[in-house]
Image 1 (cartoon, rainbow, N blue to C red):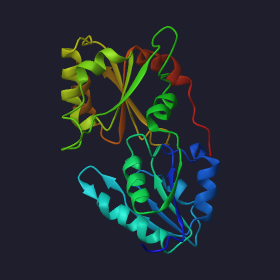
Image 2 (tube, one colour):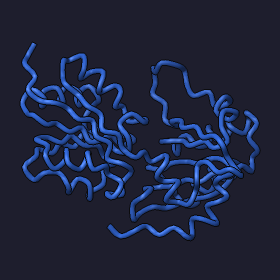
Image 3 (tube, one colour):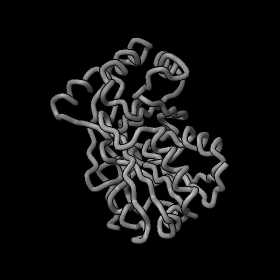
Image 4 (cartoon, rainbow, N blue to C red):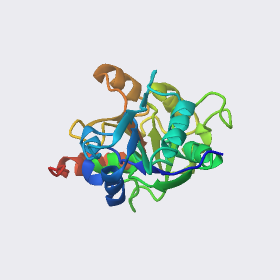
Length: 255
């Protein structure tokens, strides 16, 4: 086996606001030899990367792939055999719908030293910046996180939305806007009231943040009218009603 000289750090960049990048993540970006980053990492965070580091865009967006997943892993392995500090910079948290687990498996199998640096996930941060607490003693004592974008050939046929509807009082859906009509239909068929509130938060924690509030019955129409698009997080449940009270009092601090 080729001798490994370096280490790969799977770093969570957070949801966009550079103030939410961890101190450990920032130190690694400032000292990295190579940074391989995703599409949703903000420009402000990319600006903290050492000017001496090699920067590689491996970003994936709906319908566009800069690098295929196996190509990204092969690149990480190759760079770790050439450099001491290789950062794989991922939006949000590497292990929350970020494929960090898959990448770490492949790196370990290749004999590469690897460490995870957690990040603030958008499913928590975006609702907070919109004035929507995911739990609240008067509204919700449970929350569940689920992906709305399912990969073909995965370990099971698909998300059991009927079970999800009964599992928690607050549902947070990542990457679900393209399947929103099916998600809303399956949740209502499972027993959620059609007037259950839902909020979409787009570009959460950034100056471009936008919110759209509706119900399971009206959300698809409202998305079409407003042309609301990805990247968005969906929050479903009665906690969304607090947006009208708390959202107006939120002011993002200048960085």
